[in-house]
Length: 211
Ligand code: SAH
Image (tube, rainbow, N blue to C red):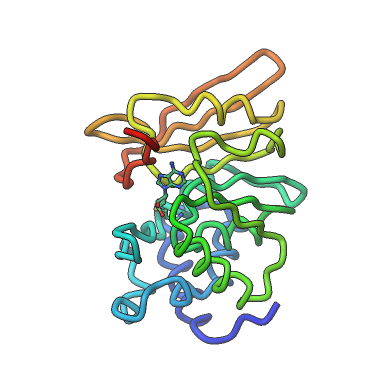
């Protein structure tokens, strides 16, 4: 992989996240992806601050700490097929691409999807598929997935279509809740779904088309 500039900054960012993130695979991935490639020109100087930043289409690239915690909770294995809902800048998808076997990432804004594809291809990552479409529906034709990452808030409604696309042994991480949001980790076992509420977060909404 041809990862060039920004890497010492990315390594320093990973080091700072160590206080809250224990998973060494996740920290190594953070250290390997130059976040500045996913941040618009106007905000580039802040790429390695632990903050969410504005991107095009009035969306945001998530805070690195939240991304790292979501990856830790999702625990993707190197053989996993992963669905990523809400491509945005593509930063989260790039990290998933390092940690898993294959990633399908869905975004409703074609321009964001195209920019994310360019940034990810520019890093030499070739295991990410970019889909423009509705994340609420997921990709039933490609299910089941070992891991599903949802990077926009689903409000009070759990994304049932996405839960149905989880493999046995699969995990899904999604921000849920109206007003106060928190991360929900859902695991599918042979017995059914088990949900675990994690820390509070703040995400842009997962838009419902037609509402
Ligand atoms: N993961 C991103 C941050 C995501 S912000 C990153 O690393 O930068 C959430 C994204 O979800 C936005 O880009 C928004 O356009 C997208 N989104 C919102 N509702 C959606 C829907 N119904 N289907 C697909 N994408 C959606």
